[in-house]
Length: 134
Image (cartoon, rainbow, N blue to C red; front, side):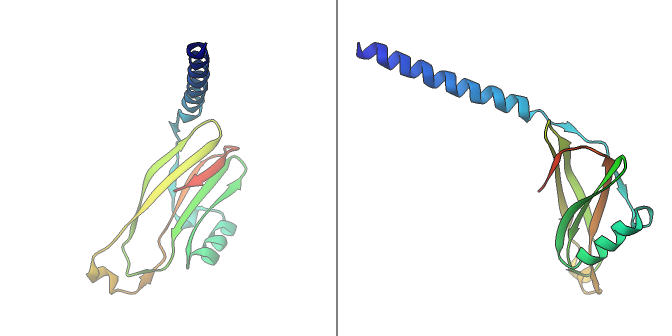
């Protein structure tokens, strides 16, 4: 009798585990998002003003106009100039957009030359999905 109970419990546990794995596979499929990197002079004026308000601190936000969304990521005040921002990931699944960027630093010599506020503007078609910034 105890062997039957044990078998039933194990069967139930395996069923639960397999169900969880199937859900992960459905949501885990990500595809790359097509985007362009924009310069400040080609974005809407209002977006430029929002960037100016936020640029002194680390920030990220989205700005949507019609069929396009701008994804803006800023790294706040940095010593020097010449910083670059690398897009490591820009993907989507059924319910989310995922963006991962990294700031590429400069030499100590470049850090002595003033201050800068590095940010990047990514433009893509509009998706009605939540955005996760890394």
